[in-house]
Length: 533
Image (cartoon, rainbow, N blue to C red; front, top):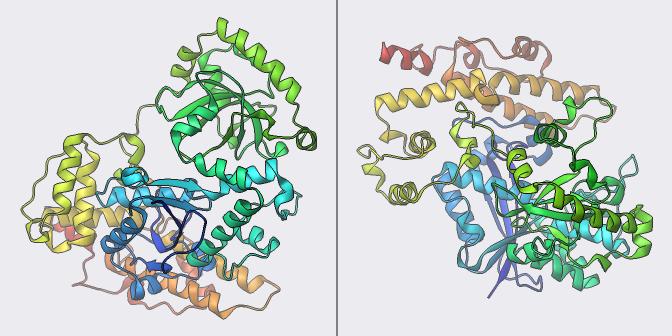
């Protein structure tokens, strides 16, 4: 029997590939959205090679000290999350979960040597994103609920604003459990007022059904509601061209608001520039190629039935259905003259992977082979007392790095002197030098000063609770600095950050956190160098 697990993370920052979970909460319901069982809230202890973002802590109120006091060790945290999401028949659901929360889960599992994808399909499990149903509701059935607006007039899909506009329970935005209840409330509202739309969107968690809706074999137009095309509420009429040449779970489709004849004389290099040029690098007059890749395994809001959008709603959105149908007929003729499969193969050719990319953020650099999978399965059940003697051989070079850090974080006593050196160098390079774009101690110090100045400059009364949060974030960063670079042998990334902190910030900074002679007066970085000398 299927159940739904509505879940949410609060994290140490905004980028799921790099950040760590601070809080996880979930509530299980039946398929009618009636709550079954008790809610669960978990915290995760801080990692010794990671710093919290001050802005994230201000938003959530969760500090490193809170996580250290009440959090579970990461391995236990991972086991509990997997137990909830991996219960047979579970539909893991969240708000914007495909883009964020599912990514947090995947990268968390990856760095802890667990299959990052298995929980999404094994034992009749699946995943669903409520935000896709909410966007489809606004695009197709806007009378269903109230829609809050941003200052510029655009509809806001922020969970807390939608909850407030529709009088849904949401006691504390950016608290994981409160966000979960708000998500359930939104889903229930759509289910009760638009049951057919709700059922269709929920069914799209099955990638085979989503593929059928996109009609690649039929080569017929379909409707997609996504993040783009703001003028039409994200609603577009698309024409399926081909399966993605690398990821077969994706369909490459053309936006029929645009004339497809421009493909006739377009070379692959021009197409690549028009598709992948970053917004900040686009020249004046730049026109993005109206081509998108839609992932069938990300619960897309796709509809084979074009009548799902009424004529009145199409007019309100400025969607020209007749022109789209004319472009669809034109596309059928264009495909007779253009080798679209060849064009897409060149267009989506994977660039050579950066060999310097850190293994922990390189999840999507390739799938693991069966031999490596079996090796990881054996390592996870190995008695920790045997870690010191274990010498696993991996086909994938990413795993050697993951294995070392796995031991260092969870079983540091199992490290050899050489492995300890590597671990200390990793912490120093990441948190002091900022290798691979990591958040550094200097960056945290500067952010704390910046937020403190903003609080002081505000016309509102200063919230002492926010000052305490900044104090805690700073103390955690300084504590890390005291461990790995007590003499500040490397200048901060922005030299004015630390001095400004001493003169501007209200926080008392202990001298030994900046220059004290901890552990015999030699930093771990220096000890590592000395041992190798």
